[in-house]
Length: 145
Image (cartoon, rainbow, N blue to C red; front, side):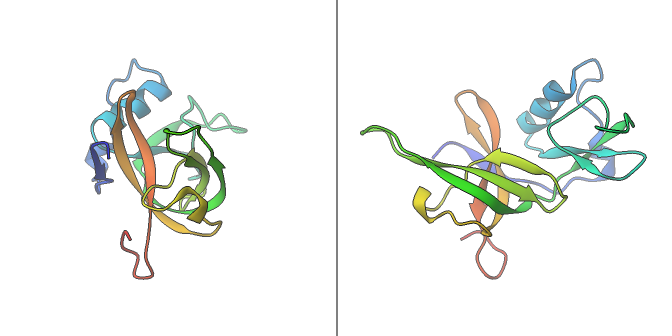
């Protein structure tokens, strides 16, 4: 399994963008490299935004970075079948508790076992191409399975 760590809690002082001259996607990736899963929030409406953008869609309002809770629910999942010896994996759409949807994968279960409605928690995995957000299933008590 690649190196990974759970999404840590952040204080408001930690929410500053890594480099103000970077675009939103580069800032997001820099946060992930620091081990922080951050999403954007509108300063005018309070709505969360994902994928990173320069301004809020529809209103053009400025955005700020906030820590994501890391909790979500599987909205949809597909099994990406591979030719042996490669392993099949799932591709999932996750509805974050903040109200945004992101594409990722759920680990810790066979790809076929990932079901719509499954509660999950984010984790930042260190892959060969860099850090990315993946999800682990939660058990009935809200802990990783």
